[in-house]
Image 1 (cartoon, helix red, strand yellow):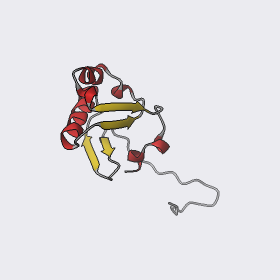
Image 2 (image 1 turned 120 degrees about the vertical axis):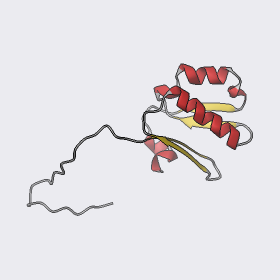
Image 3 (image 1 turned 90 degrees about the vertical axis):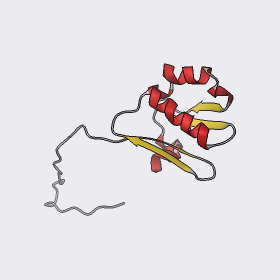
Image 4 (image 1 turned 60 degrees about the vertical axis):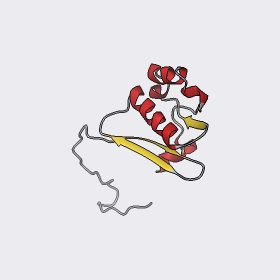
Length: 110
């Protein structure tokens, strides 16, 4: 999308914004049928939050699930490993993408 700005010719316009620590973290999933599952929170996601989201998906979607996600450390943490070892691996198959590959992740466009 192109945006028109106004500044003297040859001078790049500069927008001054006060920086804050406010942010929203999001986690989501898209099924092949187009169902969207989104969860947001005001703090960063931790391993326990990822496990909670995976549990939600297992409750909402029947059958086996293929989860394709990036190599983020929260996806590889001990909480996720423990969850899989406790039986979730029977329904969940996890595939990892490179740590930064937004072009491979349709969720990034949501």
